[in-house]
Image 1 (cartoon, rainbow, N blue to C red):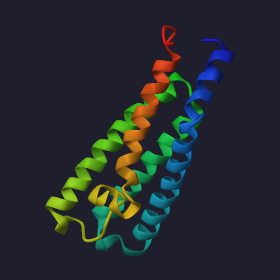
Image 2 (cartoon, rainbow, N blue to C red):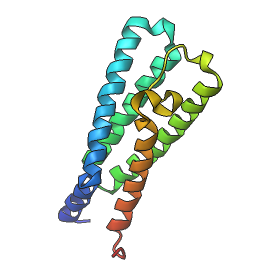
Image 3 (cartoon, one colour):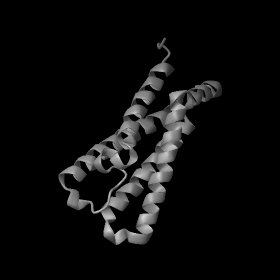
Length: 144
């Protein structure tokens, strides 16, 4: 792939709806990382699992944000894998918090499928997976 083609493919990931995804993931990075950093620093012994999971969510959001901004096929594939893992995490933690609420004395970013974040944690990976797959189809030479 030439430098011009690589640049164009990078632009496609952050153009249109991709830019909204970057913005939303950026907001989620700030929310999850700042929340978990404060909770880990001040009250970790109260709910270590919940606060650790929120920190992991923040790291995942950060990596996805970076991958979307970076662009290119490798970054798109990495973001696709991370978004799938994020969705599995949201569904697992969301279900776990409903089945065994006593395991989480305090909420995580992904508790109750992200209800505390207006369900953005469950909707965001679904939207990103759709967008990333659409971007892959648009990059194929036979796509029209």
